[in-house]
Length: 255
Image (cartoon, rainbow, N blue to C red; front, side, top):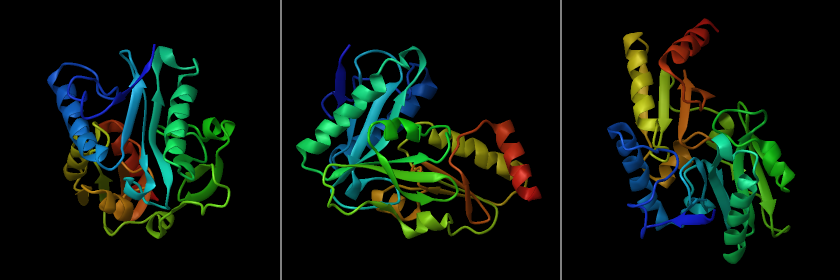
């Protein structure tokens, strides 16, 4: 089994792991993600996966163009590293990380940085995995995000979260706000579902679709693809089914 790169030459023929299936729902999910990727390739986006059917991939890009509220120069940022199902525990995550390290060194970058969490959270690679491979925590943002770095140049300035990310707030101070991008193929439908839930519950709701890297750097959550805020404060990055979200909102209202 080998690692292949998805690029403009093969993206229309290859699957992208996170949205597999020929049904209409998955076809649409894959299309939104692929359109986002096609624009990202010009900014140095890299997407690599195993040459097989399953969810095992790594996605990364230069910090100057990353869709996360991170400041820095000459670092590679890992957007996502995902290995699931029967492929877990076989060293695939390590092999995919090695690809990122190799590419960053070829570009003479100062290091690699990645967003994780102080404790294990859904959709974020466990910080312990990165620490095992030499990464160190160099910054944090509320309520649970950490920024890790693997430096090749020890004299280089560390990357950091933006001031807005460290405040953990957004401009929408009443009710629920969803700030998301098309970087994840599932965001659009989940945000629509959860925002409709807010409407049905008569809860004020604002939806912000981030469409450029600069918007993501200034408005996005540390997770990048999704931030759910309540009365202006960041609460979670987690995609969740409708019933779980209803309970989540009720608990927030009671605090």
